[in-house]
Length: 95
Ligand SMILES: [Zn+2]
Image 1 (tube, rainbow, N blue to C red):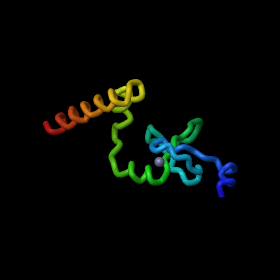
Image 2: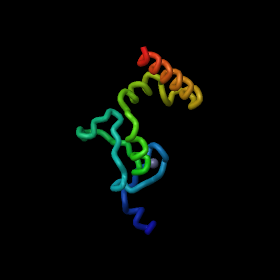
Image 3: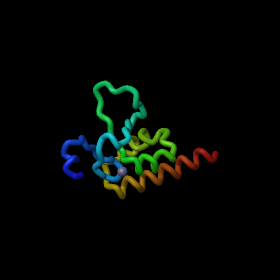
Image 4: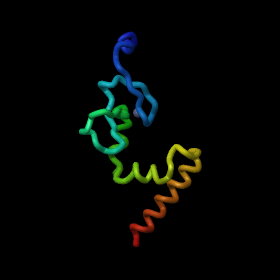
């Protein structure tokens, strides 16, 4: 079975790093536009990760991650900023 893997195009799940056949992966477009396919590459989730993620609202998440400069600081620094911004958001929403 694993021999057939070499002939199958595989992709990497961006959440867990698992390598999966492209045919079994879920496409993920970080801009939320899965219909415009021209000249772009998709990122992929495996099915279990896709199922985990879809239960949460992603409205504004990418913009928020960009604001927080995700990936440009250590994970610890990023998480601290992320948690702070969640707190801030909750305070704003409670007003
Ligand atoms: Zn995964």
